[in-house]
Length: 207
Image 1: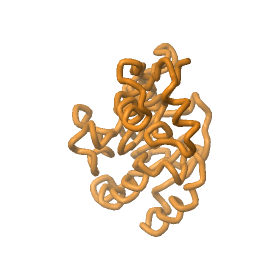
Image 2: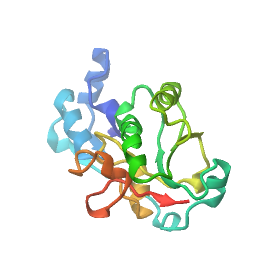
Image 3: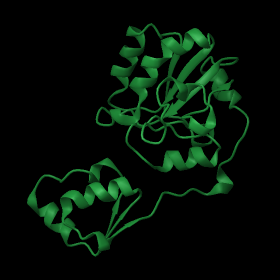
């Protein structure tokens, strides 16, 4: 039996001894990153020799550089704006994705780029808290919560503090948009919004 490990749900032992006993009995554990593999091995008791890393992949024919999505820009009042976009599930259990940090950096960034806006695509249990935070930071006119959007409209940036790889990152790389990560980049703070690619974290565009 092979166990597929995607992310943070495999980083800590599950409640209940039965789940842990079942984990130890797998023939192979396949993780999308070495971070997840190592964290799983740390609690599961599975021998390292029975663990493997198989990174996420995407169909390159479905992703690539392209023009800014004008329909999306018009729908959310972003035409002519310099747009930073995050696509993520807005879950209260997944605050490591970095949306808080982008919001906190945005007032400083706006002094350098007056027409900057932040488009947050996704929905979930943490959305109301993030909306309130944007208002508290005086960003009501700069931050747009778009909710869920269609696959073809996605232009992806993520600000994960801990994920070293995921499907969003693979899609972003295939679209020539670098994926922000504190671990991967020494300039994870405000620079992820201005995008100098070798050290950068995300690309922003004029829409």
